[in-house]
Length: 349
Image (cartoon, rainbow, N blue to C red):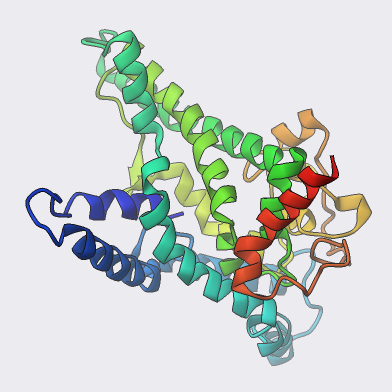
């Protein structure tokens, strides 16, 4: 997600209230304009799933899987391409009422979340700084040779990614397993069709949980490396983004799409393919609560929630499957129904 980073950026440019009586008005106008521009220009932001290289890789991988993968179309030449357009680029999908609501929700969240939630959102740097304040910042790390520095940086890069993925799994499981949090996560699962914008169909409470838990996990790792290995260590990046996240994001948009991409029987037990996450959105009883991970399947295997997809697409309904599908089609309901449902749940106790 890009919203927390945006909040940090525009806050650094705002005037102080004591020096400008109109500072709060200026700050609000500036923030709304900044976030509107950032939302529209997400294809230029490296930490967004909508960054243009990720959109390109999404399309290329989807087309290759459709043409050459185990679930290939079975048609030849232009007929195969026409069927691809009919199934995955059609108006029925991209202009579906659920998809149109996703676009609206994405824009409103992009405007409001940095403005309203910036004070409570934090990243791993804030956690590491908090630990430093409690235990004291490291003055020196290990005496590393050049090969040692390379090994330490590779280790930090990989461990950061693994711990971040584990944090996301824990957060996602909390959203499914804690009844009152599930009321907010229903917003995401109320999607009736999947497009890359569905990734952003997150209630602010949902987003906060998904931000806090990974930040706590990666903050602890960052603090430990800075304190005991090298205070200046960082992870390997590619064009400014964590190198392994580049690989993950290159196929990440396919998690929320109708294109079936499975890694095969062996790899599907270790890594979360787009097909895993499509099944996670299924309303069928056999799929409920399955495949909560994002990249590494080990967490689901240990927790007992792994459902290994086959090479061929399964047929299933998407949505909540609780007779409310199709009733979440308004912004007001996406924002306020979870509070109503939570209140009802509390009153029933």
